[in-house]
Image (cartoon, rainbow, N blue to C red; front, side, top):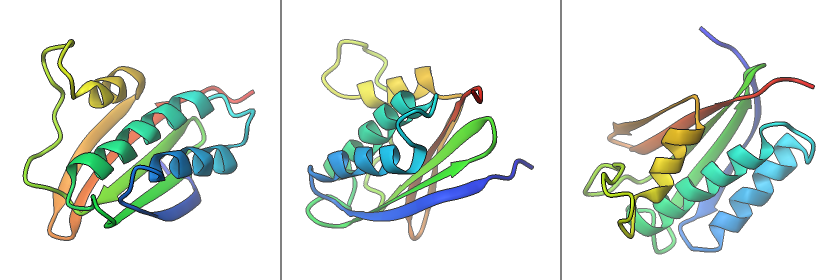
Length: 131
């Protein structure tokens, strides 16, 4: 089992402005010179945007973002109220939606979705090499 250091947890409101707040939170917690900063920031932005647009957290509900540093990877959880359908990658690369999860799949080391009665967690891990 991999252990790490919890860098931070923040609660966001299910509104479009939360994506930029999530990006700022990542920059603050990782630091501007972290080797995984750009990848983690992009993926967090995509997942928070998905929560705002597609989950039951939209229209002012709660979204929780947690970031941990596990020595050679960053682990991120985005938790929302879930929704009527599970997140999925669209098979058509030119479709209007589904690109965010395609990016998560392409960039992350691992990722998954976990549904529970209290809500849905989409998590990912991004590997990096310490400088």
